[in-house]
Length: 438
Image 1 (spheres, helix red, strand yellow):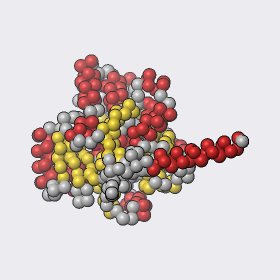
Image 2 (image 1 turned 45 degrees about the vertical axis):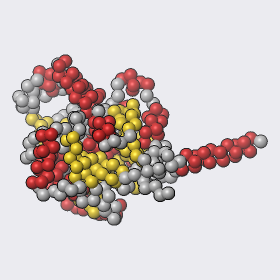
Image 3 (image 1 turned 120 degrees about the vertical axis):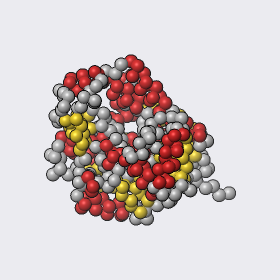
Image 4 (image 1 turned 45 degrees about the horizontal axis):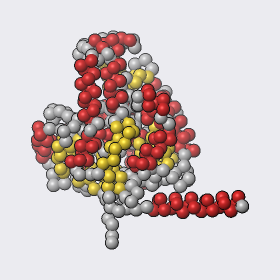
């Protein structure tokens, strides 16, 4: 009798699972390589058109607009005019580019400040509004350097304004909105479009309040990812790249990094539903500097996690190690201008540095911060920054195999890396709705 009951229960479970998976009204976040209706980007928040961030943005838009509509978000009429003028000056066709105004802030990092999108088989689309971890990270940064109460309050107000971007954008575009309690950015998680999601566990749990950290569990996150993104399988990764560490991440005596503090789009990406790309440091490279060594250890741990991971159907993944570019290192000099605020000066003195000292600032470089659109893969080139051509050729051949029907476009976006992100960080795809036939 027990055997009969067990089999019956199993049959009911399988049938209910099939019904759930085939429910045409169920929303899921598509993979990046699936058809796109548009790509959202943001304009750098200043008027200095000679700034290389603007030029890089223009180069990316030039490539994208050939196969997908680009919506370029700006935060003022003046910036709207500046963007229009620079695009025209560089002879970028504007028939497939819309410059849209949003009364927000920090829109340049559109992957993180814009909403995520889910679709269903009824031809519907929904925007998902996650909270931004900057509410904790940016405010902590100001607190660490002893910012005065007025400065701290300004930062709180700015971050709150930034956190409204996704809902404001959705409202302007008349996209239905689903609000979530999770503090996470679009670059921090990666989906395969079939129900699996990768995310750094340390990233999620350190970017919340101490009270939330004490009460939240993996199960809380998994349930919310299921509700918002249609995810049924969460792969919990370890730490991300050391190069992408949070502001003020020190390695060794004088190496410093400043990035997202663990976004998946720097180190672990889906190339198709069953293939995961992992950033990799070879044994012979790990002793170059303390940052390389830290990344080497972290990626070894992530490789072990991924070897044991299963997809949404219980099958193992194909894991491909992708070489990393040569480090791009800038001199970070503690000038009187940088130390003019007493709190900043005290911060560096507490950790053993004084005016005139030079730190090695390592940019958050990675070949995995690429963006896939309808017929292209926009990638980063590091040859001009000292990466051996043979390393980039290896990456090119790999991606040509993974995306045989898409054109590979390499752009030097190191200036974006130096600001803590990459090409994927400044692009956000809007998936095409599924066409419903009667």
